Length: 249
Ligand code: NAD
Image 1 (tube, rainbow, N blue to C red):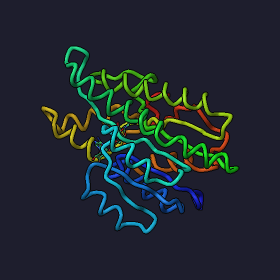
Image 2 (image 1 turned 135 degrees about the vertical axis):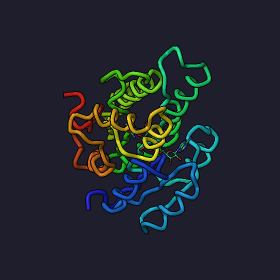
Image 3 (image 1 turned 45 degrees about the vertical axis):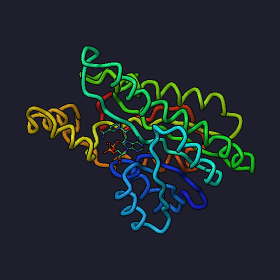
Image 4 (image 1 turned 90 degrees about the vertical axis):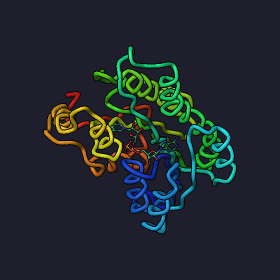
């Protein structure tokens, strides 16, 4: 099992790619500390695997991050998965909406990594290594998409943050990478489709931007998550790994 002996914390593990990643990592032998704001979703996740323990965590709550960090063991892996898609151009973007996206998509990763990195450095000092994985997107510094100003800007910042952390700690056994999925069929994508003026057309449009003619399923994404959190990717750091079904060919 590729993650045997590793303890990995994940945010936004209640549904979508976070949940699928928690289950995939647990199946590979990791002890998974799964966090989310949705307590009900966490309970069903905990009952799905003996390797998963759960904690309520709002990643926008700086104090809650500190409190949780003090209770945790030193970690081998951290998957910063939480993020939010704001829909709109720069002309639709209020200061409040901008600040919300920055706080949820970027500041949360800064705070969580800052709180957990000392323990990861201790793990690495004991002869091992530790891996940080940040959820970015193909919609970022990699490619611009319509009505994704706050999203693309903040996911670009996630890639910058990833490279900065990787550069600072490369000599101390810490790796940091970002994963950049294409359009993935998750509950929040379904919500975006349902919220469109014409949901049938909106789904067609999301599929049309994927050259393979289909949405990604979470199972298309989890192998890359497991790889980047495992020792198989020991020589990989500072990278933004696209799993986008060919959008950015
Ligand atoms: P999702 O959006 O359906 O679920 C997100 C989870 O985050 C939910 O369980 C929710 O309860 C939790 N959450 C919301 N606010 C939170 C907070 N403040 N603190 C902690 N948890 C919180 O899942 P998804 O679509 O797989 O998205 C997960 C990540 O992947 C996001 O960062 C998203 O931007 C990114 N992403 C999604 C897609 C896609 O097409 N779905 C593509 C690329 C990247």
